Amino acid sequence: MGEALQRLDVRGTFGICPGLDMERDILSALGNPERSYPCIHVAGTNGKGSVCAMLASVLRAVGLRTGLYVSPHLVRFNERIQVDGREASDAELEAVALAVEEAERGVAARLGKPATYFEFSTAMMFEHFRRTKVDIAVLETGMGGRWDATNVVTPVVSVITPVGLDHVAYLGPDVASIAAEEAGIIKSGRPVVSSRQHPDAADVIRRTVTAHGARLVRTEDAVAVRRKSEDWDGQRVTVEHADGWSASVCLPLIGDHQLENLATVVAVTGVLGELGMTIPGKALVSGVEGTVWPGRMQVLHRDPPVLLDGGHNPPAGEAVAAFLRRRLKGTPLALVVGMCRDKDAAGYLAHFRGLVRRCWTAPIQTDRSLSAAELAVAARTICSEVAESSSVAEGMRQALEWARQVGGAVCVAGSLYLVGEVLALRGRGGVS
Image 1: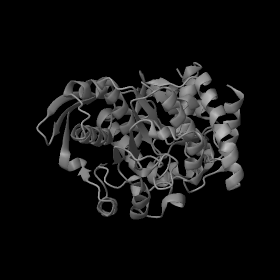
Image 2: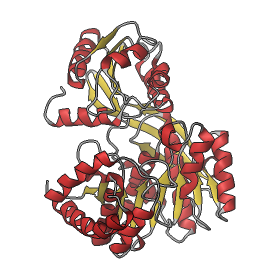
Image 3: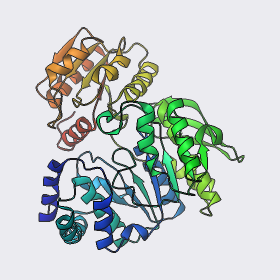
């Protein structure tokens, strides 16, 4: 890792700064790379990463050189910035980091503060996509939308995935407040695709679209997705668009929520077609079927079955638990859970009540982590056999041993930090 990337890590301590002045000024100093290519901008509480991954895969299948920006990363920072499915190399990132540092110097002096980690990395992304000459970029917001550093673009289409309660300290105490922040990505005259929403969120989005003179496409009006079969490899579904197009698709992402995410992706492609960016049905199907999105209900093992998921709020817990109830059908389940202290651990775990036979709680590698003891208090409300582990590795080892003995399965869930830790362990041969 180069020196500029090492300095980027230190910025993680600078916190969150609402406002777009820093990002806009840095990009201006760079010559506004964000204006060099069209963008699709995706916000929402749940599913936005999956939607971005599918959209990017579909656009690549069409033959477009596609940039993808997601966060957080799981194992390496490079995961955040991808072109045509390839992560930016260390050398490429070092080069753009040096360019952004140069651009930031005058801006930081004028504003009296440095760029945050996310502001800086977002500027790196925009510049890298310009240097690699992408045809189009798919951008996931980091948190919220209105003051998110990515919200300096005027996208060809804005996308809002399901809005729920998360990051309430920053975005607001209820769904309507959070929806108002997410809807901050809506731009005048630009079409908006919205996933199926809570009524309070739907009302906020509708009013914001009207105020901006934009056009709203509701996923439930445009696309129907029906599951025909499901296994550990994914879901066989039928997709029908309101324009008469239909197809059978092997969706490699599992869970009920991915049906909604797929419907959102198909709705976006319909809007792109209306804007002159035609996406043939064959490319749409092959792109969806080729989607790779690790750490989201990812099957790590088959014998015993091990499911890994980074969802960390109650709707995410509901999605994982619903899938496991369908697939396990009486198979004993072990849960290894690690979560951040700013998340609703009790609300997340409540969906596993009556499903989990044994639970291991573990601290995760972040200063925001709940301790194993704190998490065990919540876990004991859904399971009588709870063990406090000293680490994720220890909890997984014990859970796997138990599952092999009883013919059970293991779910490892509760945080993207946890997912990153598990995938890093796996890469070192520490998960078997």
